[in-house]
Length: 186
Image (cartoon, rainbow, N blue to C red; front, side, top):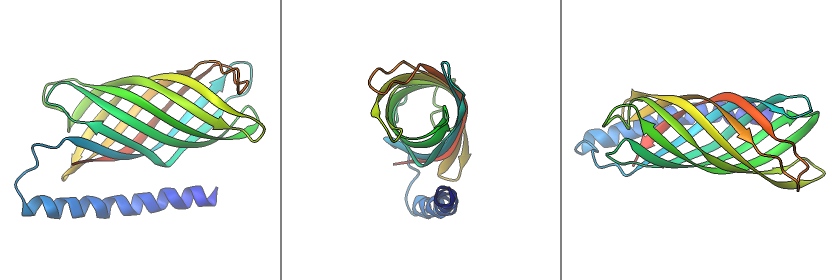
């Protein structure tokens, strides 16, 4: 657990220095209006309640990454990749979660600031020490981007549903939680 907290602290210390480097580069060249990608790093936490067992808190490590494809439209596609650690149902679980989400900006031209809605699907690749397997899931959230120099703080609150998994013996589960992170444009 100390290693997890250490990695989270390291990420919070490194991200501002990367952002200030981005600002210096932006000052040396014209404004980056043609960014094609939004790259982000998040910390996330959620309460997960599987069917017929006790729920628990699952924490997304600083390895929770996003790669968005910026458009001038209100819709934007985003790939997500998370490494999760948690105790659910009395056991420790490590999981890898790749997924795809679509973001819908609430106003035209607000892909770098303001409120948005998001939803998508993911695949949980989990190992609980005894078994490993795959579990499919869906999610929806409301989020906000707050500009920070050439970057933006990004906050999301949402919920998800994981379908029953026969190979892992995992019951279906609900989750509610949030994420906080930083986005950079390239």
